Image (cartoon, rainbow, N blue to C red; front, side):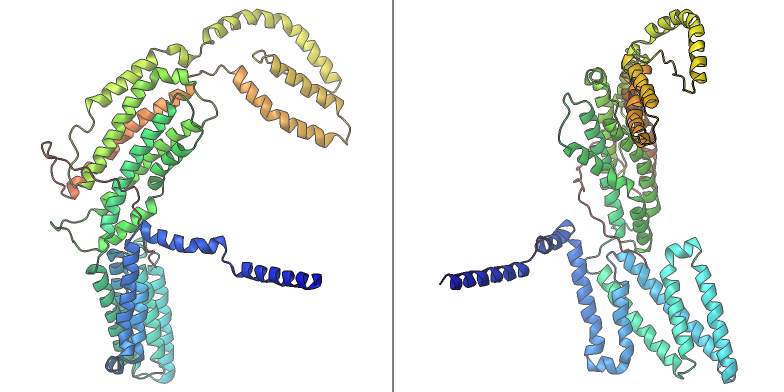
Length: 537
């Protein structure tokens, strides 16, 4: 009976183990949530996926419907390939790739027809030599043209399609007589695919790269404002926080600015291809947006350095920081206010206020300067004068001790030992470490203890250097704060460059004039703006 029970329990355990094998793991369980988060982060991705599905269904009718297949034939597959390759996330990217593909196919077909017309009357051997020479010359020339920066940036995909189509038509014309019909059918199928892609991109829920570039610029200005505000508030807190939420908030504010160069250039490139779709049909100043992004990155480097002041090893005591809290907080507040005003002006397509640099900013700068000048001992060092007086008294004592030290050095050199360096500015703990280091070197000369001596020296070296810096050099307690204050002043200087580029953007884009009587509607913070950029092939 017991054996039967044991066998039954064993079979049950094996069944449970098999069930656990088929049980989905934690990573598999997270896949549906990740898929949902991708669409929730940017709902336009779902719309783009539906547009691609509808486009592929429409172009597949060239194969599925018998009347269309009889007229086009197997070349209909080129229309399917065109939809897969050309249809991109934004309208500008689709226009760029669609027009490149169409022009490349048209030019390649025309050139291939010309070569076929010239080589048609020659013999078979001469025709082969002529076609091979033409393929070599055109291929080498087109590949070299791709290295030109302007071609590489705007028409690289079109040159690739030109090479592909030209070689397919020219080489196949040597064995096939109806090369003109092949080029004709291929061009029309590619035109059908491009037409479907342009229809879905421009007329069915269009996604404009220019608007994405506009929103990211606004978001970068607001992110910098939030980072500066969080930096200053954390620097002047009375108690240090244990959590890192504020640090993450600071980093997220300027991260998008530092990583925006490639995204801005790609969006500006695609925005160049987009038609004028605004109400007033003004030209979109995409290159000026790129300049604004470059100025914001230079401004963001200062914010990064300001954030670094919170993480330095040597910090100014909080009691000393409190002496300069009021002017620094007011100065940072005025800078944040100016950045928010610039963001609102770009968001609402209007010029910024003439009083964006108000008198409060200059007053805060003067108050910070006055506060620093009112505390000279903090920045010059509290022991500076006392150290100078002691230095004069120590000169005579050092002269009397020269004879003794010279004799000691000569004795040490005769014994083959290194003499000790006299560091009068070191304290007793540093001298004790130096004596311990010398005694350690003298007492461990055997080969077996060489490795231990090296490890001990490596352990003592950083400790000794740190003690030497903190004790021998008379560092001021307010020196780290001086770096923090200088970065605040540098931000004010770089703010002028940002304002100039934004004003130039408003002039080129024909922003409406600033009206102080009108109710300025504050735009929502596009903190979660996600830009999907299709990579140009």
